[in-house]
Length: 442
Image (cartoon, rainbow, N blue to C red):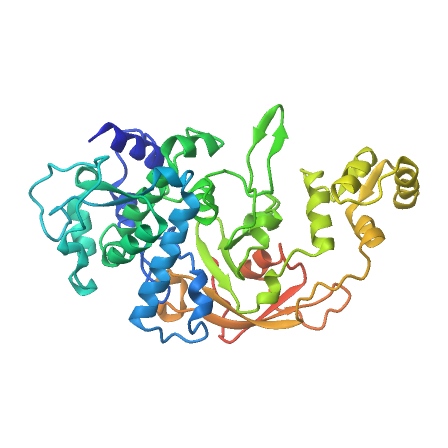
């Protein structure tokens, strides 16, 4: 195994005791990049729905094969583009070495992950999906052999990248397609760049015990940055800088862990460019999406004020010391003359408690702002695990979301993990599903 190959393995899998990665965990990651309406075998590498979803028939399950191919490859290209730290270094694509894909050879293992540009992908990877290797072939391949038959090629331009990703469509869907693409993202990003972004450099991207992907891995694929946290911007803690999310993501992220107060997801992930959210539970990722574009419109002044206020409240207490009020007002380009700030302090803290609450602050400067969100809209939830779907038939579940006010309890639906997860963004959301049972977050 080449030294570069070893670096990739250490970053992704860590250095588990006993010197090797569990065969069962490795097998879970050897699936192909299954499209959204097909069965998903692993418990972690859940679907990141493409933005192209809005260009095709999202409200029906009858996707043509060409639509699937175009949407999936477009999304994979965009993930690689967002991960690329420097366009001048090009984009890396990890594929099988020539003649070494599992269904073409099981005897030779002389090719390793090289750092040179490769010839075009061998014809074996271009075969139709029905000729792709099975899970049994992946088991026979094994962890060590898999890493001995990989090859890295480099493309320089975005147009070449998109063309190459499209030409490798059957490779992504075939045996080990997930790992091949994951390694492509890592090498495109750069191993050292990822290590500089991860909070704990000893934490691998894939947990060696349970096989779950880390938050750094999720963030890398969603935002292009392998930071370990989900809040907006960077924070100081005991003299150490902790990196967060620095710009609005294309696809959002919400987590059940926030409802349990283990973390606080920032606005850049909660309010993405497209109304698609990855939902995280303790062990799994699923997808919630809608066609209602008003949910992800430009940030309103009150939403900006909430985000800025919360950046001065890193522990999410719902208040800040009154000494920080002037800084918050300056950050929002509000009048911040000392006399006026003093007047606002006395109004927002009439009992002289020394704190400024978020609610009164927003009411003072941004009263009666209409969010523009409709009272109800169609929603969809997708969980790719067979065992998590009714009669083990993998398909998305359709429903209707109602966004109510706290003073208007017209409808109260059952309390479910999916609902608790969504309430971290819409506190008074209610969900009416078309199925007899609510969809599963796990």
